[in-house]
Image (cartoon, rainbow, N blue to C red; front, side, top):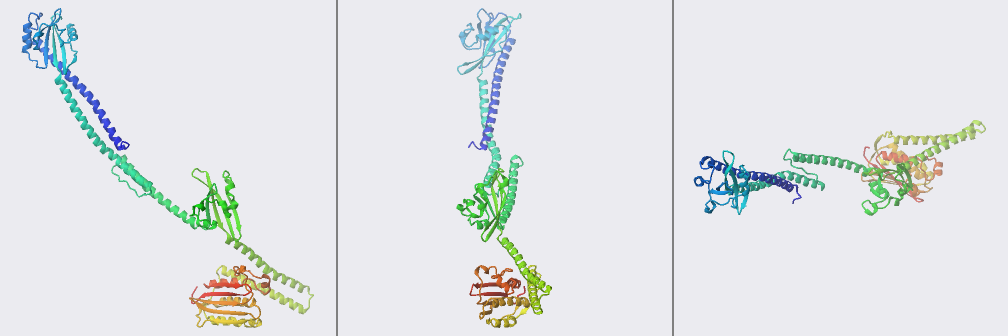
Length: 602
């Protein structure tokens, strides 16, 4: 209980008031006691002086002759029941010659031998001095004051003494009553002090206790706390500052939560994988992309405790042999080629709260697509160069032969036909490249209109009729009745279908079968061209729509292909909002399906 500041306040107030009252009481009681005794002694002295001045008998020099007169004077003078007066004659032996005491054997007795009288005061008075010094003795339960008063002759000699005793009981009763009053007053003052101290301490401790409780709630995570401000003093200022602190803390936490939410969103949705590892190489944090790359479930505690060197993606960094005292070696970049996947890894150190290096931040970027695109670009450049180099070389060699003039007319005509064919080949190549370039830059202008599927296929098959007959191919048509019109660019779609059907003719043996099927599936028109030709190997099917990609490069080139037909077909179909897909089995045939929305404007 006394550990509380409230009770410490009360105890301090209690002790302060108690000590103050005790000190004041001691001084007041002592002073009152002294004052009461002095009053008694003063009254005793005044009584003696009044008797001396008013009695003619006392003025005589020889008191032994007027002993009776002095006794009568004492009897007539009423001193009260508390005071006793003795008259001592100055003889060889101080003798009591008169007294207000009722003891009959007292008169004529030796003053020194009378126990009530103090010989020291008597001797002092005989020295001619008024015995202003008083002695207080304990006579059983009675307090007695003594006063020895010398009476002098005209010549300054002591002719006798007035010795008076007085009971101090009234004075001590007054002092004791004052003590009781002061004690009661002290008790009342202490009670009031405890009560007021409790109120004052409560007014101080209750706001502090309230602040403490609210701070405890804040420590538990409940930040919605407010302390009522009841005054403008230091306690009120403390409450106001607590409220302001709480407001600022909430504001700061909201900003931190917002920033954390932003960072978490960026961290979780960024395209790169991010991993934080400690100095021991253990993973301490990672985003979902890194989790997928490393194939680690970060909700599994056992996976988190695994060393990153256990994963083959990070083995080239060799985290266990990094010198953390050399910051220059802690920054680096690695490229890892893992079969079909290529990753670029960058790593740099991070520091802890003591500004010491705590580990590494590793960023893993999947550059597989960029790597493939770079390879495709290189392959594209090589293919274009090869496609142009062959006809140019042929034209140059035949032209040089013609310039030399050593050939006959028939041979010259044959050479010119070769040159013309190579020029047409280069023209087709350039035309296809320009068309792809227009697709890339979205600069192709399509003239779309409603076209009948039946009429489009009839026109295409009419153009290829001679080709079918030369190769003895069997053509099978399966066109659904009442096909809807489709909104397309006729020339563009005709180019697509001519290219696909011509490829089926070109890569199907003589006497083979080519099937063309058209039907409606939901809101799309599907056109499927199938053959039972040589087919396409499975490993080549993913790249069949790439530019300049050929399954059999030598044979395709001999047949006059540029390797751009299917790529152009894919671009045209997709620009019409459609899809093109391929199914093939090597040695058994190929099927290409075109799906186009009908009556749509794209």
